[in-house]
Length: 165
Image (cartoon, rainbow, N blue to C red; front, side, top):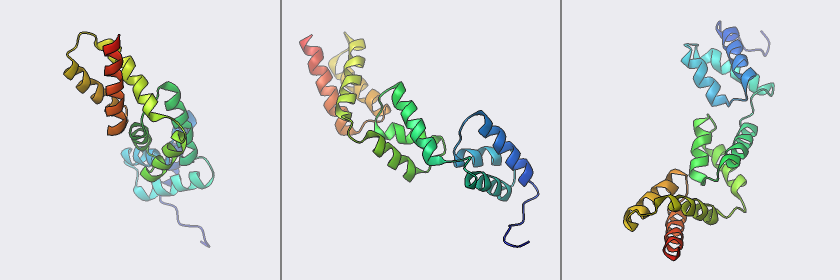
């Protein structure tokens, strides 16, 4: 067979299914592998098909991650933990996701992002007991992926702003 690897009998089916998924939108290697294995296709066939498509340039996790981060940040400002989580959920490798998020957020003022989100949310909590408002704001910011330090600082800023209103 030369240097060509023997193809698994399910290879054509796996490749066709992967191409169908890619025809709708860009996908990650991890996503495709999971979906194809979920269809009951053999792991070897899936690996061969996805590998061939990646080598041909149809699957590029780094490019996918960069575009996805741009889209996510266009929707709303989120912290690094939430952005990384979203990429990993899409099938991007953890290390690649962390690197792409770090690059995308370089030079951004995450403290200000968190403070803006906290002020906006605090405006909807008029009349809520201050301790409860602090806890709710903190939880809200944590769910948006901000670090503890950003959350604490933003909550205190928002609460101080609310006291001066």
